[in-house]
Image 1 (cartoon, helix red, strand yellow):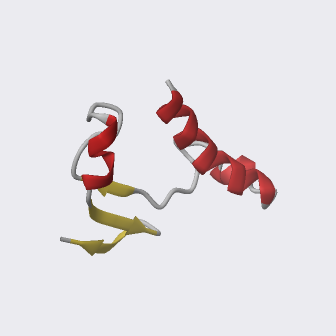
Image 2 (cartoon, helix red, strand yellow):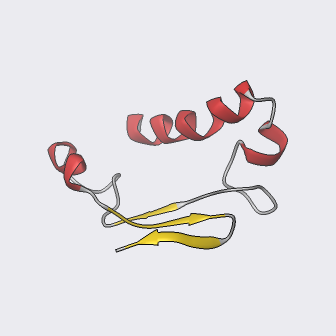
Length: 68
């Protein structure tokens, strides 16, 4: 699926560029992540509706940094 590949590149390429792939390149236990919680699953909505997905929460360093 193209969208899943895009998500993987969005996560892994910056980590590899910064030589931090051992701590940041994938969403797996023990690695650092600052996730965002979305209003819908981008892999399940129609492609023309992806732009309507909202960020409802952002977590940075294990703390909620922003939420609706």
